[in-house]
Length: 138
Image 1 (tube, rainbow, N blue to C red):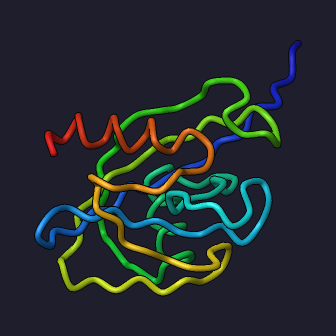
Image 2 (tube, rainbow, N blue to C red):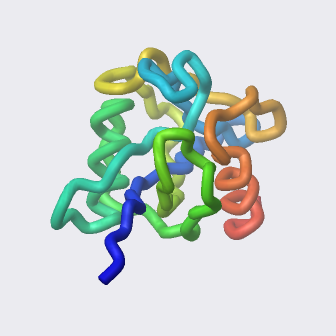
């Protein structure tokens, strides 16, 4: 019998509409990619539903509460995370334009960035954002 050393995380692609769409990012407090911009997200707890985990991680890191998110897809390329083989399931949502994010938990800072002018992102998060924007025709 083989044992797996694959871990599961979730990431949240959260947009708000201003003059253009803005993407919510967090500045990571910890390694890997400490001080880099990334999507809010984290590890799924044992016996936790994936969507529930995405909603929880979003609130823990940004204080933004949502009731529903739509699954974008799974990202599991080996070495996407330097810690181990990690598969991330990404979720998408749009929040009101006056939504304020407050950094908490693993987030050192939060920021809203125009989808047309994003900073360099940690992990493979630019691939997740690109697919999300394409999938939801934004």
